[in-house]
Image 1 (cartoon, rainbow, N blue to C red):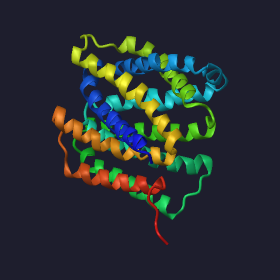
Image 2: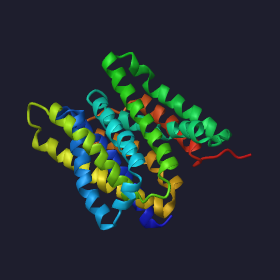
Image 3: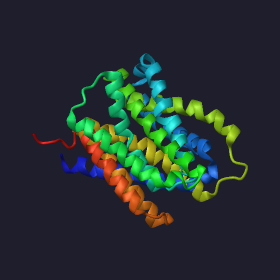
Image 4: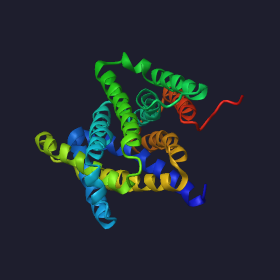
Length: 288
């Protein structure tokens, strides 16, 4: 891996890691749906001109159904679920749960695409899901509100995994610019009308708006451009290692800047989830 690609990988992990802190701060002011509407609209304002410059509109038009489906499953629904969950739980905890999305992708690829699961991948799926249980088990009995918030994050990770499988099945060969711009516009069209109805009565603070703008421009538009560039340069298997970096940065940023607590169960559960993810995605393998 070239040094530039390695630095891009670290930068992407940091950008997506800090996005959980932005959501944690801004979601109570905007509400989950309004915040995510701002996020996808701002990202669309960056990505659509890029798609026009790269003449990607014909690709979007010819693949509009799977692209629109991706916009709903990969952006609109999981974004709002994570926004809702972080009204109650920390960004660090949500980021660790988010690391389980490749596990859901592995199960769904086996069910929907017939992908073969060898011993390492099967073991990785079992280990990873055991890590999720270890992470959230003691928190599910704290309160019904926390339990629902945790389940919302788990469901968001499931939708990320589902979207990845559907994209692999239906959008192979379509340019990343067309996919990202078209799906982001779909998410905007879905969330923007709802956000007018759910817009907060009290205007969000200046800090809240800064967080929302950074979330849309830096953590969504620019981040996805970096991600697709990494996929092109180093391949999807290596690019997905960003999954391991996101919770590390999310936990660190949350602890440093907004005083989130780091518990032993978060460290233990996160380590087990990441080990399972490494096995299920082929980054680790058993020796004969």
